[in-house]
Image 1 (cartoon, rainbow, N blue to C red):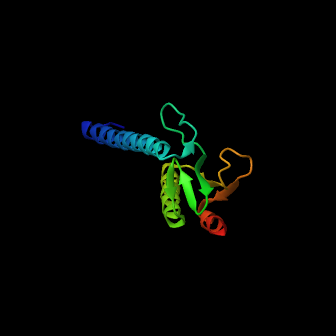
Image 2 (spheres, helix red, strand yellow; image 1 turned 120 degrees about the vertical axis):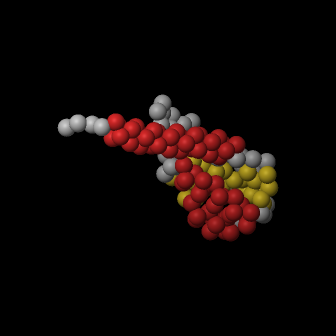
Image 3 (cartoon, one colour; image 1 turned 90 degrees about the horizontal axis):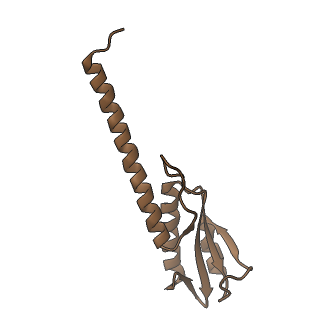
Length: 130
């Protein structure tokens, strides 16, 4: 079987296009990961040399103080907290976080052992109970 120069160039072009896509995706994942950390999402560091391995869990923490939810020193009403948490949960899912969580600490018991893990969209039912 003889390979012609045209076949070799086509294969080389396909490999280059694939590697370009992979690098673009890798850079996007790293950028989104940094933006999520900056937005207050508690997530473990990314590992992996050739391809970023995204941690399985990501946590958004709110503290319930009165009728307000506080995250990263920013006060949210319930509706704004819903919008913020949904946006962060979607962004975590987009980069490959398998189990994004919302954690609501009641009262001003920051760091207390009594807290509620609320999976995904169930946050809304939990928040409206308080």
